[in-house]
Length: 261
Image (cartoon, rainbow, N blue to C red; front, side, top):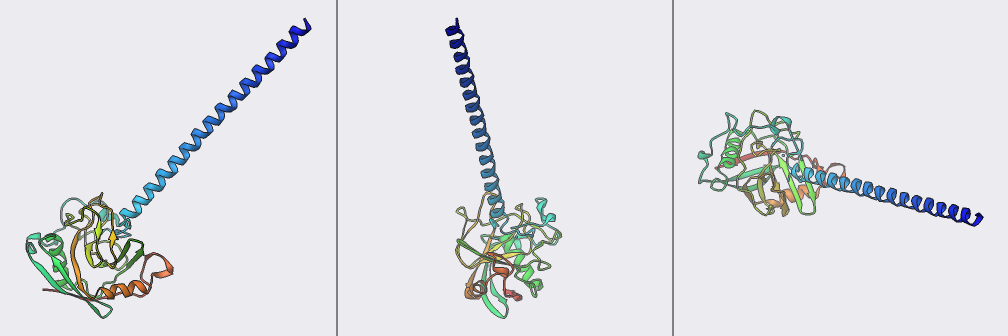
């Protein structure tokens, strides 16, 4: 009888140990699942943040903002909800369709030769020809410089020089965007915020071959620098404020004039 009781106790101990081991395994499995879920959520959040930064690279604080910064950065509240219609004062695309405008953009007293393509981007060419003719760009700043691997832009033309867009001057659509997202050095493109009708007065010049996301419509290539790109390259060499890779240029950059014919 004693032997039987002993065997029974040992069996109960084995069962208890087994159940404890199974419970521990179940807890470990749940913990791994929980840890894996947390890791996946973190990865998704990181990916989403990277996409947002890339897509806003050009909007920055601006409704019409770089190359996002990636990422285009970039955006003004007023232009984030822009309807698919142009502001009343935006010129018609027909005024530039089929035309090529050439001229000079002067930054800090240094001239760049530029050319705008009204065949590939008639609406954008019409806008910037109008802004040049009206003298809007004179005295405006280039408030943003971004310089990193595969991404180099100087962004200019904000109404108040702070990267904000003008809610009274918005237009679209996006035109002449590269399917591969490649904007070669010397490209002049239009900055915008989150919609394809949030273009405005801001533009950016790439001083190195730059790749930008195209999944939300991309950024209109309106023209190119035909001479003097070294002016922008030298601005980039002077660096960015506080040693950042995206921010205000260390050297203040002002548009002296923008003339097209």
